[in-house]
Image (cartoon, rainbow, N blue to C red; front, side, top):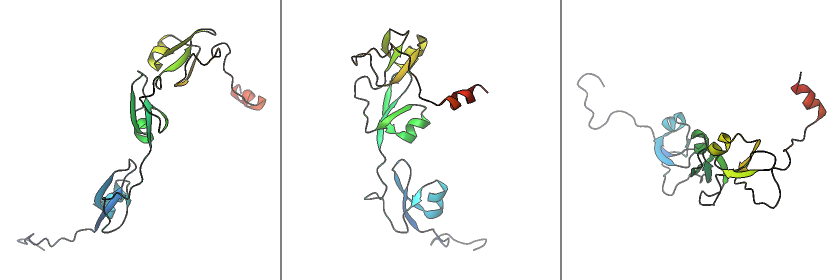
Length: 156
């Protein structure tokens, strides 16, 4: 192969192709080197994407501070700077992206994270929490169980 060489038929060796699985569950036909360079898992020469050899990636509700929701993988949610609620959770569930906000030790308001933070709450509960659980969730300040040694370490 030098000056004046022809490319038909192609004299350049082609890498063997096969199925390449990515973290989001997608499959593409690629050579082993290209697959591994892009952080995929190569399934060997001649493997195919139909049917896909890639494991299904679980999805769930991903909540954003403005109260919007998307059903995506946990990795995608993290890259979008959302809060992943859990595998198989659904955005269609009413109130999944709202929080119970304790404005003082008696007043509970359900709002988006942005709305809640604007009210300067004493405490914000987890996504999907509400004020109607039959108890006064704002009546007591939440506590964290710890040891005396751990408390002393915070003040050294």
